[in-house]
Image 1 (tube, one colour):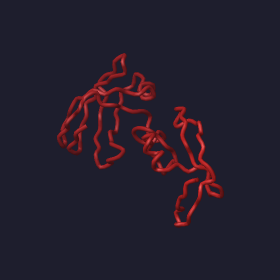
Image 2 (tube, rainbow, N blue to C red):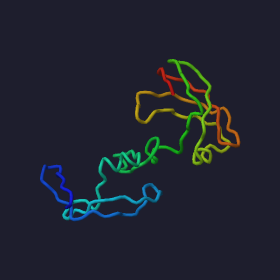
Image 3 (cartoon, helix red, strand yellow):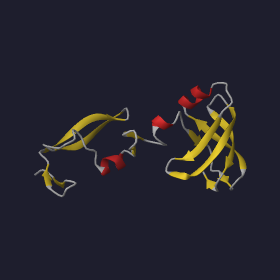
Image 4 (cartoon, rainbow, N blue to C red):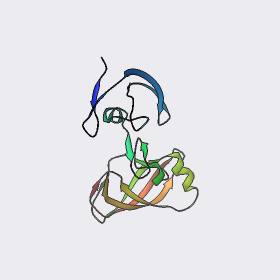
Length: 151
């Protein structure tokens, strides 16, 4: 017996069949059981369970999924903290981060300043000036915080 679903308008929809489908999620191969439903407006619909299982985030502005950080079209790379940092309001602190390859390539030899935001909490923001980068792509930043932050 195939599964039954409710459409957004509340109408009952019955799946024609359930199949295992192999495909890529953000360039990672996977196999997942999906329901085949005739007559849908879209070719493919991702359920909340699928999005949660793969840890996906979605940018409605660019209609694009991503795994970590903000929308890839709105950033040149990512910095990941090497340790927990507490920044008091209007303070200047020094902290170590690991840089993604696109960010290292974009930095080059130039002096660099970054706007630091937390994509899921946009009211938390500050600025950071690059101090130095080593061969492991670890960098020291000197940051100024506008708000109290625990990173």
